Length: 116
View (cartoon, rainbow, N blue to C red):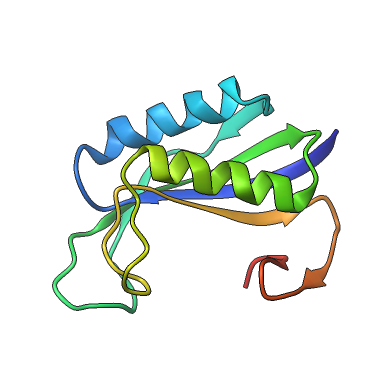
């Protein structure tokens, strides 16, 4: 098991419920000791103008998944919540970013750690 940090955000739909449900989905998928931060609201940065504000949280957890498998899990959970990837930094129902994976440092087209 390694320590990981994930950033969760949503700026469409029932944001708070989506984040709570996403945490449950991560737990159900095998992440352990989920410790979420308080929720905080922030303005959308980058992307198309006029987006609603984001509701965000950071989660510390433990995972036995390899980094790429964890990224794939996060993207599959995003898709279950209606995430579509059409325009970079567009409004979204759910965004899950893998921020840190233990002390691993890597940079490739699929995954950069720590997350920039």
